[in-house]
Length: 233
Image (cartoon, rainbow, N blue to C red; front, side, top):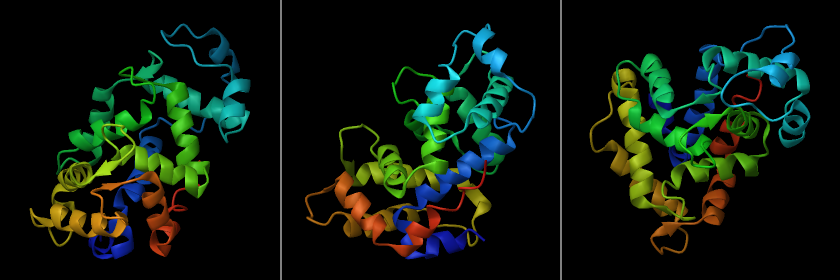
């Protein structure tokens, strides 16, 4: 089933985008997004957790979620994370449950860093809904910016071939034996060679945000993948 992703050139170029969106679906299935109808407005104001979220009005203005959606999201988030924040180990536990045949720890590490925008070692409710808003309701440009940030591991504004390889290896390790046919050990590096040559337009050894977005926007398969999980919530 997953072989189609690896064999389609367009999705190969930015296969991580599809997996990031799928990750949001995994969080939904885990109960981080709960569809209780009960109001949690009072909880947002009075909760005794260590980290208190911003007011609903501010989050509603900063995201593309309605007040009711934010209430639902917070209920699920607080149920799973009573302290009000998620640490990296929690991310790793989530992915280890859904990919038991592989090693998801490295991918979870990269994804955690993408959500942890202020780099303080934890993901707050605000961090969570801001990222979720982009991935589910953002424009194509915003989603691609988020994906670029995921690839740009050292956050220097460029994607190197090694960074792209690290992400691809993390995906490969996470999927483990779930692909058919089973991918060969050299497959990630082979894919990266193709991806990087396609994206690095001026052949200077790094991919800029403009090169990344331009390449993705000119690939109809990638554009189609941008809309896969828009109706999760």
